[in-house]
Length: 266
Image 1 (tube, rainbow, N blue to C red):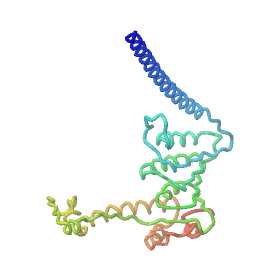
Image 2: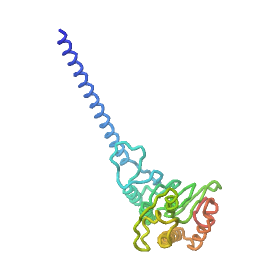
Image 3: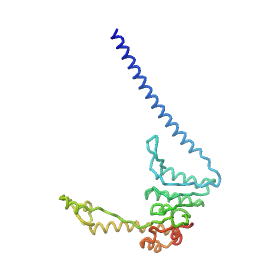
Image 4: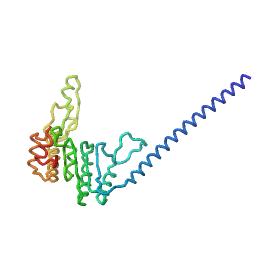
């Protein structure tokens, strides 16, 4: 009799275990199906957006962009794809219901390459005769790089608004002094005057050859940047460069920015 009860008990436990596993699998499948269905419906709703007359396309790059969509079903932070942004701008240029583009550039989390590609798309958009407007409370190197593609840039007419635009710089950490102090010696094979890789381990300061290379590279980047600002903002290159190099655009306000032509409206 005991064996019968023991066998019966094992059978019930096995049945309960299998039932629990099947239930968990079913719940997991339901969650996955609901997630896929929700994502599909969201994409469908996006494609069904109705654009009313006299509308403006709003662009906000605070969350940045990605080259392609990730594989995760649920994303905590929604990011736009570069291709999608460029396509939206292109379609907006031929949409009769869209009057122009409004960009909030308070926070621009884009790489230099992304800014350049979006900027080129904005230039093509403006060829349709439509305008691009940008607004920000804070102006810096990054968001101004995008803002210059707008027809007009506006900032609040208050002293709490801030402009902080400066030049380029590069820093390197040199470890020879620290290594000598703790008794470590680095052996680095150095061939050629302009082969500076690893010099931070056996030199205390930057070599003149590396400094020359870095200066040449950043001078070129700076010159191209000044050229772009002067072209887009229709201001004198010398005046803008002078303002940056003299630190006039560090921690200043929108009132001064309008005065020298960095922005249009307050």
